[in-house]
Image (cartoon, rainbow, N blue to C red; front, side):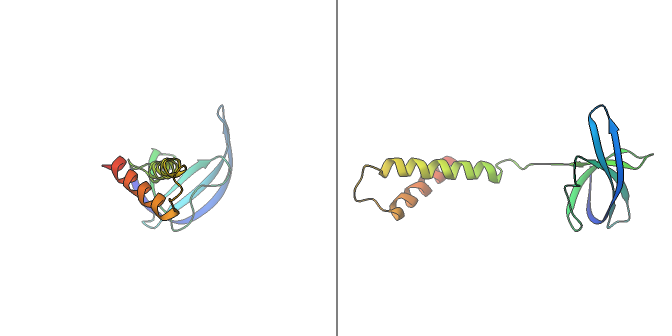
Length: 116
């Protein structure tokens, strides 16, 4: 696996196989390396992006983007936060003296408990 900062992207036509029709893109990196990538629709990255890629065929100069996801992703944290705010709202729903500040403080306590 390699990393590179995209310097230039050029559309190079189409290519078809049993999986469908793909657009071809020639991508040049800031280190001078250049590879051809396939994409359904537009190329998903832009000039200036730092990407990880894997060379699929050195002879033909083809590569594919590698998508990595860190554990404990932002999506996971968003789900936890939303769930704990809902739990705090449900808990305080029948309490006439509750206010938004109390609900948020309790949600934050629940989030901390989950993330331990």
